Length: 367
Image (cartoon, rainbow, N blue to C red; front, side, top):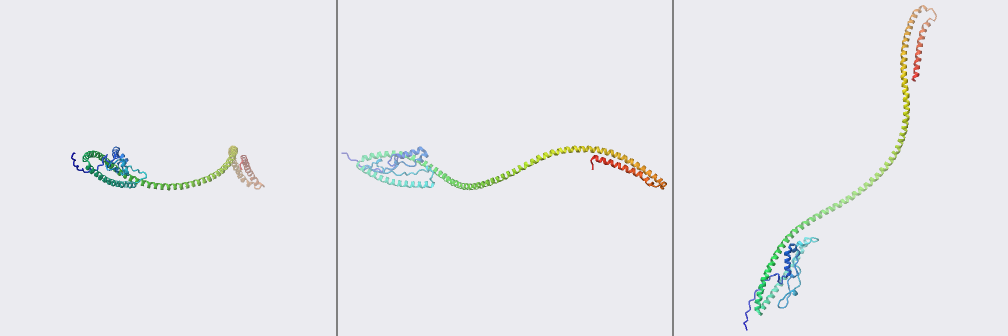
């Protein structure tokens, strides 16, 4: 009977690495990391919630400590908060988003504490299993140690890859956080601008309402003015129609008078024509009378000259008679004989001339 080999020293329990294939990190974590790596910031923003398979398996099966999907504990709530870049602005303010994120972080912290307690319990359970296995089967324990070491190296390599992916994800998260701060600032600016625009809109609405009131008042005033103006226009049109009728009547009267005046003018023209003819005849008669007067005047002058000569002769004769009269003074009626011839001759000449002038005046129609 072969001698039993001494039990090998129990290696210290390996540090708990959450590799991509460890019970604590399921396939969902790797898928989540890869999706975040390939999809960029937008994909990381969309993949802000972890998969249910990333949660630890809390169940235990028998003394062997086998765990699987059948023995999983109830799934925990999602722990990672959604990035602010994916926050919808419709109906959600910045303060509400920050409160929601704080609540999610508190829930995540409580979940991590629970997971730490479960990990401590798993460590103690695995350590007790290792001791029992080393006591019962040292060779199997050594083989298991080698297998565990190899799996440890594999898990470390995978963990490094996952760590690199997580670092890239952290860088992208930082970038998204920077974008979040920029977007937050932009949102704040937009909120301020919205407040200013709302105030301006309120002012414009108030001004618009005032303008509408003024417009209604002005419209009412204009309507009243239009009605008054229409009434005035009606009165003016009525007065103008009456005045037009009066003027039409007056124009008709004036036309009748004009017709009468035209007829009278025609009659007066006829009379004027006849009067002009008479005047022309009178002028002709006047010219003839003047000619006759001139002839008569010449005759009168000749007769006056002759009369003067006769008077001179008579005066001479009178003087002669006067000289002779002393001798004849004894004769009765001698003075009458002296005076009678001269007086009779002068009176006859004057009577003749008077008859000639009266005849000419009667012929001329003079007064």
